[in-house]
Image 1: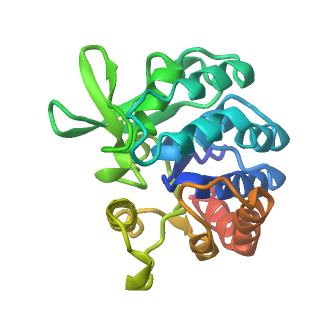
Image 2: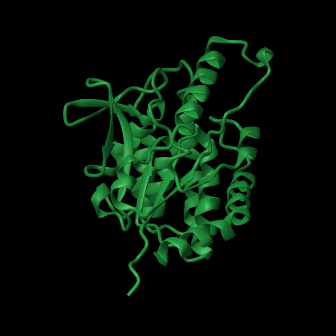
Image 3: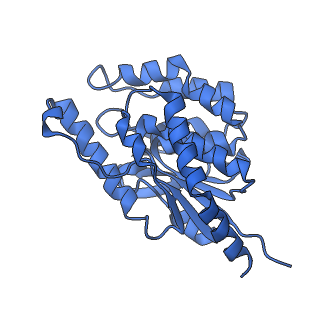
Length: 263
């Protein structure tokens, strides 16, 4: 009897571009590719949790369209007061049944930075909304989230396409990077905020790149670079970018799964 090939999925952070993850997930679902474990950080963690909670593609897209969540998100950038992402918690309650990570249908590990230890940690237990708020707390733009007497922020600053937990339990690691390296005109960096955002973009791009060689397969839709990190716009277009990129590489993905399954 052939053993079941365990597939791990890593979803990178990348702000509003995470909508492309939903398109990738839809393409995987159409091929009935079962994901055994998800590791994610930043906005990728939100999409990963929605997927692990069993939400349909339609409901995931409805989630990102929620006006209150993204209106509040943008209102706090850049200097209108550092705040908790309380709106995220309220909307999660509307869309997910689980209140803790361990109750999700697919195991999920979320990468966050412990500010006290300076280390990257993978949280796979605890209050779902708290951990997601920590994963989305971009340093300097949002307040760190306290969990068990520790302070946490977005793990993407150290590892934006995390894979470590997958290496221990999966036969195949599929990475989805929505933060590919980019160049922009110097003239576009015309403020302190623009400089900080550009540095964040560079940092998460470099951190995502370091694990590409370790993944068995990487989906990296470069067209996402045409869209903002922080503005929720062109939802349908970003979804299609992710979907089309995954479909274009699907024969190779299926071939890899078949090869691994035959070993």
